[in-house]
Image (cartoon, rainbow, N blue to C red; front, side, top):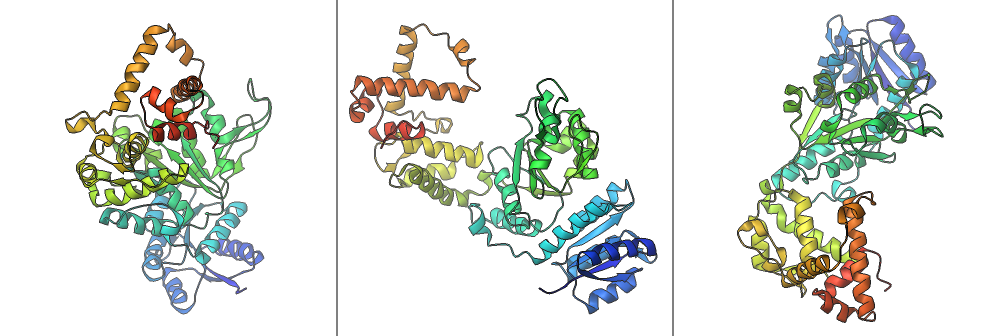
Length: 467
């Protein structure tokens, strides 16, 4: 294995010596420079796998070197050494292209983690994006997004992914993870709006046994679960203000304190976040901390809504139908020309997620292997395309509701979510229809007023098909 080589730039001899000894014990050869000018000479003469630079130098600053390396040696990871508390300087350097930062006084365990990750990054050759993640599209917006993802994958800088609901923000975050040196480590996604406020600190940072009522054993938090990998905060704007303070400290100090623990634990995670809200507006309205916003918004990546890349709709449609068909082992349906035209002209307020839902419904309810306009049921286009199957199903449901006195709200309260309750109700309806038809699926579908294909799809989706 070729020996690794690092360039250390700092005007303080004791800091240079500390870094040289630490890297030497990691079997990394080092060259040192005390000024910007001497660092530029060494960069021109040698190949390096890592660069560590102080921000304040006698003849300039580290930011100048970061920008130079970004332009002339884009594959060289450079980490900056900042004074304690100079988080604004660190953010500025990462926006300029720095791989990561470390604060003085230098913690050796944190330094070794940073160096290891940086060396891995310099050696890492990412696979082609198309083979790694299902980002579909040939539009300029998608191609620009792909290029940005490939560039950001090597960095450790936090990325704020903005975009409307359903536009694919989590897919983008997963792609950044999959294309980077952390790909073999965990990718942990958490919806910040789905965690009860009283459990949030324990979920994020973990807790020790006996730290509160119900804490019967130690529990690791999301930061520890994502150790060495990526932590993705979805809908980060939904975090309460008190939790925003704790998250900010965890990100800045790169350490956490589990609930009930006496000591902090160092962490090594890359932070990505997303929200469909405008964080700048949330900051102005006082609902989101400005310091956390600046810490998360080091690099912003915008995901275009589907209506702004209509040339991708046909490609996405084919991909999603193929996925639906493969999931249940049926032939891939096709769209009629009129149906495809209708989709191409639709404004998709729910973006790709809405397209997927529209196609799943059409795939389930269509009578043949060709999806037509009426199967899409795009009501807000000015016409109601409700199918006869849906109308029959609605009538039967209404009749059933009138014939049987059921306290639906009370029964729904017995379930953890509305979706779970509706799935249970659907199972009851399907099983009852099959029993009445003596498990003749064709007859059961007729009694329910749906197609055989629709019945088979529903049974497989609910795990009731024994075929």
